[in-house]
Amino acid sequence: MSLALYRKYRPSTFAEVIGQEHVTVPLSNALGSGNIHHAYLFSGPRGCGKTSSARIMARSLNCEKGPTPTPCGLCQSCKDLVANGPGSIDVMELDAATHGLVDDARDLRDKAFFAPVTSRYKIYIIDEAHQLGPGAANALLKVVEEPPPHVIFIFATTEPDKLISTIRSRTHHYPFRLVPPGVLATHLEKICDLEGIKVAKGVIPLVVRSSGGSVRDALSVLGQLLAGAGPDGVTYEIAVQLLGFTDGALLDEAIDALAAHDSTTIFNTIDRVIESGLDPRRFTQDFLERLRDLIIVGAVKENASHVLRDFPEDQLDRMRTQANLIGAATLIRAADITSLGLTEMRGVTAPRLILELICGRILLPTADDAALVARLERLERGVNLVTHSTPVLDEPVAVSAPKAKPVVAEPTPAPEVKKPIRAAAPEPSPNQPVGPVDISALRRLWPEVIENVKKRRRLTWSLLSASAQVLAVDDKAITVGIVNAGARDSFVRSGSEEILAAAFQDVTGLVRKIDVVVDPSINAPQYERTTEEPTDADQLSGTALLARELGAQVIREFER
Image (cartoon, rainbow, N blue to C red; front, side, top):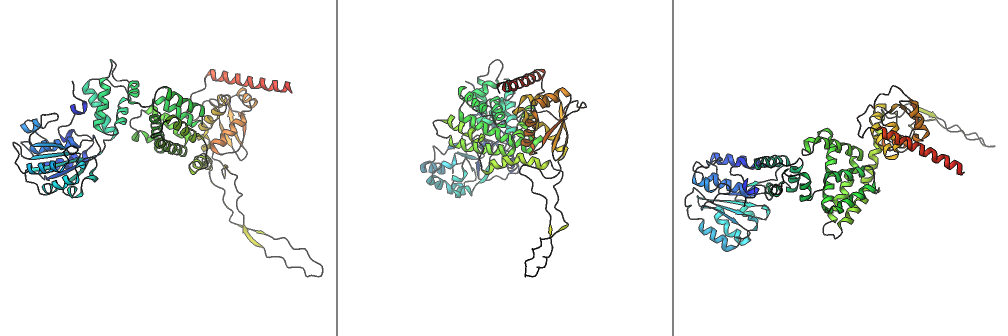
C-alpha cells in the first residue's frame, strides 16, 4: 500500500513549506539568531501547514547543529523527526480533542519537569488546541507561563479565538494562510512530474479550485485522480465528472443565452444539467463563479490574465466578448440574484426549481436599482457619442410682456418693465444624446450594433456584416454605405432599415432614420469581429429568406 500524497510529500524543512513565507522566514531568522521563545501558537485554516511546521520547528531545535533553520538530516534527532519518520521520545504530539481533560493536562504538567532523554529540548505539540477545556487550559497555564528551561510548547489550532486569552498572551502567534492558487498549481504540477503521470490541460485548476487553498486537500484530490489514471493519464472529462464540476461548454452556453436574453436556451441548459446527473447546487455555484470572472474581466480589460491566471488566452478573449455584450451592471445584478438563490438552495428538496427561478429572475426586467442601472448602462453609451454638450446661452434676451388693453374711462396702464431672462437649451428627449455625435465613437460601437442586428434578423446581418460601414451621422439620419447596388436594393426591399435603426437605438440610444448608399470603396470591415464571418451559405440563406418574405407579401396582397 502506497503512502497518500499529502504524507509522501510532507515538508521536512521550512524551505519546503509553500505559500507561508510570512511565517517561515521569521521563524528561520529566530532559529538562526538563537532567539527561541518557550511557547508558540500556529493558527490558520486546515491543511495549510501548521502541524508540519511544528514538526519542522522541533526538528530544527533538536538538531545536533541547532537550533538551526536548516537541519543537517544526519544526526539521530533529524532522522527520527524527518517527515514520516519514527518520531522522537522527546517530541510529544497530543490531540486536544482526545486529551483535553483536566487529568490529561495535570499529567502533562507533571511530566514536563523531567529532563529530555536524548535531545536538547522536550517539545509538546498540542494540535486542535482550541478544544482544550477551561479546566485543562487553566491547569496548563502555570507551566506554559513559566516552563522549565528544557520545555517548549507549540499550540496549533484553526480557531485561535477559542483558546483562552491567558494562554494566547504567553505565546508568539504565527498566523498561517490558505495557499494562493498560482503557488499551489505550480506545486501540484511538480508532484505530477515526480509521479510520472500525464495530466491533461485544465485538470490542475480544477484540483486547486476544489481544494480551496488547502495543500492537504489538494494533494488528497490529486492522489485520487492519479490513482484512477488510465494509459493516457488523467483526462479533463474524467476530472470534471469525478469532482462534480460543470463543463465549461455548459457555462458558456448559459452565459451566451443570458447575453441574448434567450430564455429557451437557458432552460434547455438546465435540463441538460439535470439529465447529465450534475448537482443543481454545483451548477449554480459554478455559474456564480463564472459571473464573478466576467465581472473581473470587464473591469480589468486586457490585464485579466494577471488576475485569472488559470484561464488560457483564447478563453479570456471569449470572456471579454461576453462581458462587453452583457455589461457590468447586468452581470452584478445576475450575480446578486444567483448568490441569494444559492443560499435558498440549502436544505431544499427541489434544487432544480430554485435554479429555474434564479434564471427566471435574471431574465425578468424589474424596477429595482440594479435593473435600472443595467438599463441606463446601455443608454449612457449615447452620452459618450457626443463630442460636446449644447451650451447654455450667456447673453440675456429681452422679452417684453404684452401690453394691457385700454379700458374706457380708465387711464392706460404704463407698460411693464422689460426683464432680461436667460435662454436655456431645449430639454433633450429621453434615450437621446445632447449635441453633435462623434462619428468615430459611433464606428467603435458598430460591431455591437451588428451583433444586435444578428439577434433581430439574420438576413439583415448577412447584408451588413461583411460589406457595410458607417459613413456619416447628423441630427436626422445615419448614413450607411454598402459595397454594391444589389446588396443595397436587397437591404431596402427587405425593410432592414427599421431593423438597423432599432439596433442603433438599443445599443447607442440614438433615434435616427437610416440612409443607405452605395460605396464601392468598402474593402473590409474596419473593426475587430466578435462573430464569425458570413459564408456563402449565409448569403444564400439570406436570399432565400428575402424571397420567402417577398412571396408572403404577394400572397397577402392576393388574398386582399
